[in-house]
Image (cartoon, rainbow, N blue to C red; front, side):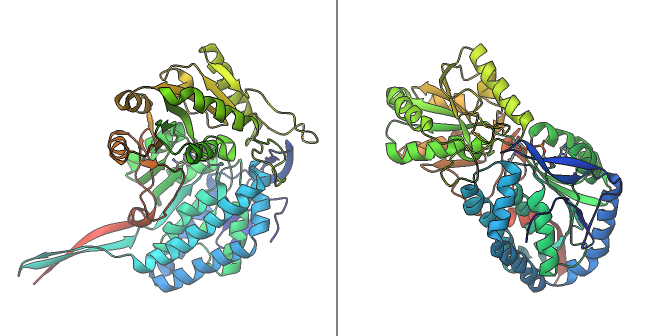
Length: 482
Ligand code: NAD
């Protein structure tokens, strides 16, 4: 399997150009060069995809879970057999280090498919017995045609995280990857063809969010939308979908606190905090961008952290030595640099980084220094707004109450990390933090059975495990009189 110059839509089992014949340039962030073309699809392509999904739905929803299991496992196997090609495509499209694509992104896409292929075999529903009168049972049926829309930071990882539970539960899908990083979604279409997925079960329409994406949300035959992306886009989608009474799952932005108490395991905390700050150039919704450090550890933490951040290697994503590749686009690079300027205006001190990096032979690529800032108030814009790049701030605190108030002060509530050896304190913090995920003495440890999602402006609903299968099915209570 190899990636080709012209990406095509995947509709009713065929790879086809957009009806308009128009394309969008696809950039390689590591070189700043256009390297492929993306269909600039519109509502006509979406309509074809929806009709294809409607046509496939009766057979797919009734073919039985074992058939769905077998085909999904085959798709996962094909991705695994083509690991290197998928990883190369993901790093070319996103600028992330190849080591990350090969060990995290692509293996996780395989796991998503295998997890939900097997989960559907074990999915069960409740029954409620009324003594000598009746028995109620919950019948869960697939919804029909559903829409899955995903962002650019973890392209195949998040795309399959939505598609896998949707098709496992018997739905047919119209999906749109980000127009910034569409290549592995195109390769997924090729894998689905090879695996024998029946035409129309999964349809992939490429293009801009405001055109192709919005057409999916607006289409009356699409009964549910699973979306991951920015909070502003989530609001827009909710405005369109809510009056049409569509089921909605929204996974949105974050501004996650990383809270470090002085009694932590220092080495474990330090190694993990480097990762939680800068993995994928800080472009993971779960990165801890606000680091709160207990006051009497602050100077020790700062010295060691800055020393290690300065050693991170920024450069060619295809070198095995690279820690930090390119950020995803020129526009995103400018946005992050604007936030660094804002931090300075707000009185912050740049402890390291703060500038673009010129990588020899990759001068037009979008590289940024990992940046550490101190001296900002927890309520300033830099500490309230999502930057989504390799930028963290350091903030000292004295008491549990104080740090909980700082941590909860943003509009977001996606994830939080707490470092302490005191189990009572860990439990108190987990109760008080307003976030959908609380990691204690770890970061990004993921069990796919657990509920995943955010509070406040970080989202509505939960993905993962039974939550996802419940989202993609409609419960009916059947009451049998005895
Ligand atoms: P984005 O909101 O710009 O785009 C996400 C997707 O929505 C893309 O496919 C885009 O084309 C589409 N889209 C845009 N406008 C649309 C519209 N009007 N109607 C329908 N679809 C539309 O987000 P992004 O910049 O691609 O991703 C970064 C954001 O995603 C960050 O805020 C990050 O925190 C968030 N994110 C959240 C999670 C999570 O699990 N909560 C995971 C990853 C990323």
